[in-house]
Image 1 (cartoon, helix red, strand yellow):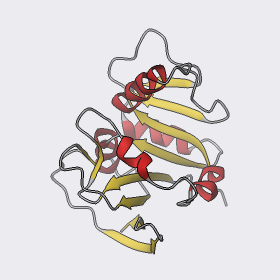
Image 2: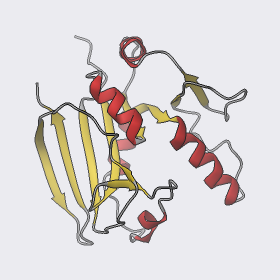
Image 3: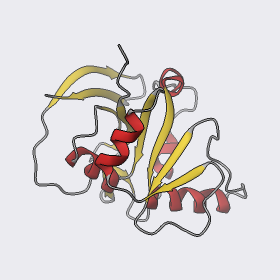
Length: 184
């Protein structure tokens, strides 16, 4: 039997529920000790596709430009799909723009063989996929920092989505990893 490819939101939030500051800045995440692996080494080999929102994509391009790095920072061993109503004339190497509806895109994507799919975010894209019933799991790393305001984990929605807690782990530096599945 063919295994269903899961779409997994693997993300960090502040203790007050934000994934970034209002301008998209995530430098508050970089204050964590570099020696700690919060599960990325085990997670990354299980995926072969990353889903990006356009704002996240644009922020990342700008971030790398400011750091003096080329725009080709996308892992070209993975499929990188960027959702946008208005794709740019040229995409960064390794990125492909998508403007089709979430449901039809994910049905097509899940119909192809492969590993699991990382929903990178941002909040608007997460809400769109959740509303379409196309997210299977959340792997949320809660950083013990309040940032006061910013971009929430997901855009406002008018629908409850029950979750099943699969695991919770506290790291020595206070980060808490919460793994949820969507309840059926």
